[in-house]
Image (cartoon, rainbow, N blue to C red; front, side, top):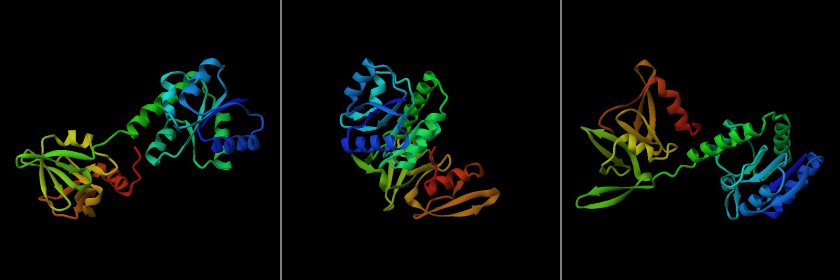
Length: 257
């Protein structure tokens, strides 16, 4: 079995080589590549290995840039320090990953998974394409500020200061933690697209709420929930029965979709 390692930290690469030799001596490491440019050149000039160990963060950029230049036709075991939201992308697309620092047990599991992998090169490439698409969604850039009108000026409103956004007689308003009211010139749908879903939840057609604003919840009729915020709202914020589970997952930080 032939493999390459794409890793820009020499000590980390040597550690990985040592663990591989201990766990699976039959794996021959053909090359240790330290950059995107070096990796692309090697892959273009050499036959495909059986397996790639790939660090995601390289000195000259994200390792995913390699896929823009060449096609990797074999399974990949990623090494990463990504947070749980991005890691979900690896899990759902059946691409294995190892969290740094790499331990013997996690490497053993990853190599065993590779051995059980029966997909052909086209299937492997499709998995990688799915992974990249999901990661792009996971790492989407969200707004830190909105420019909102205040008297005759436009002022930056930090999203971390927003407790909730709601529609009041067809006018969209943002309420901050210090009870200030700002008018917004976008629809709730447009605003929600620009907010980090880890921090904000579209409670219903009228309200978007911040995790920081939630005080507690009350049971409501028909297995619904009434959400109580740390500052008063003009009407009750009701979570429908169909979305109660989703809301609880979001509030507890376990919603990874």
